[in-house]
Length: 434
Image 1 (cartoon, rainbow, N blue to C red):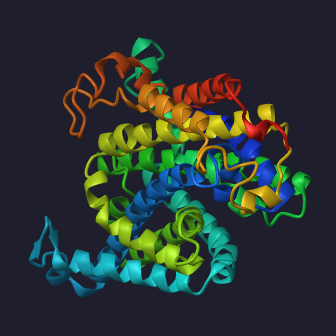
Image 2: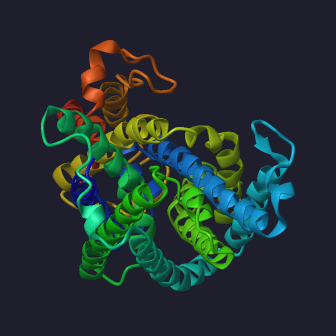
């Protein structure tokens, strides 16, 4: 894509995902409940674990990806200071042992922050986020000077044009960018439960998400475009880009900012939610801190370095696939809360055994069927594009659904929403009366 096409795609995705994010945030502020408890109203006391663990395992994957990026930054910082012996060390699993040590070190730093608890996370976010934003702005200025100003960048036209080739790439790219925040569109109640009121949480998200994400997007696009001009290569990995700088001081400062940015995102977006989710599954045995440690362990087991080997795998496999799954859950929650329950829940029944939200043995089969059907239609057609690496067959897991996969999040959201409402009229659905 050209810089303008990429910017419009990312900005539109953030505006679209803001809608379910705001809709699902309402219950958190109104009732002071986290996402797993909110899901009990429509999936059942036990069935809520289905929605919560789907979200949790995606967060574990993200935690692993971000931890690998942070480990790469530490590996490169030390290599810049220690020399080629560190960078070219022998290794295993396709990586030098020094990279594995860096990965482990960054993992341990995050685990230490998680063990300190939610207040430590809040303190870290308060000072890290502004500092990272300033650093990104400085990086942009540096690259614009190297590229000879913004003019040459704006004249890069891309290779797709605005015809059929663009639209073929646009839709799966839009779904992938929506999926980037589809996780938080579910579990925003984990954060908005602490809000002072609906007005504050709504305006906080409206003013926060589209503006900051659009700014970071344009910075990333311009820096990547400038790198193409300066280094004659498209470099999408920020760690690899930083290593191209000639000044050791600039490299180290840039990589430290990558470490801070990665931690800032990782502990907030990929630890808080799964910690609640795992704790909800076994509250007697799993605390918030224990849930965070479980997240870290699974994040390693997922082998995130494999997801980052190819941008096609990262965008169209990882993001596209789970976007469809989580879009389905979002559809069920929005239909249940806003249409069936009209924004009213029985708070006490959410925390008790057999009662209004017990349904059948703790499961609401309507929500389960809607989720399974939505997942099959939205992600069942997952495919690997010809000429690229990936885990799926070229004609799709379920060939009949291959076309739907390019619209995975929208399909999942629509099917989950419509099918849950349809099934809720069959038999007695307690979520409608609160």
